[in-house]
Image (cartoon, rainbow, N blue to C red; front, side, top):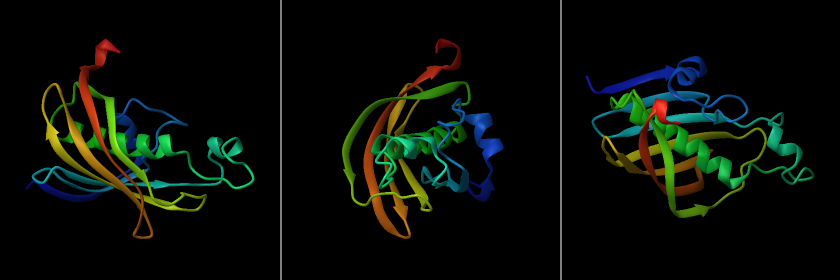
Length: 151
């Protein structure tokens, strides 16, 4: 069965991704479809996030680069689930990024990632983050796969 619908919790995610607080930006995985190269992750944005202290503190919004990072990390989980377990996806390129709606404390980001190309050396994903079914950000991200021991 290639479609898996389950909740991957933060502990399971931290066993896959090398990131740790405050840079682990995926809280849960709701579904993975390996046949379609798709994954749906969740990031709960709280007012306690350290970046809100300095990023427009009077009107806090989540930095765009961290939105892209959350999408990239979700893609990294997909790559791992596709069998590249001894490698880490390293961001190479961001293309066609568009920020459509500010992300605020209290928002729940739904991180939708589709693998366009994934191989043993790298690949490309199309990603978008939604808040309450409204598009917040979209982009295409390219990555290289490097051996875990190389970093």
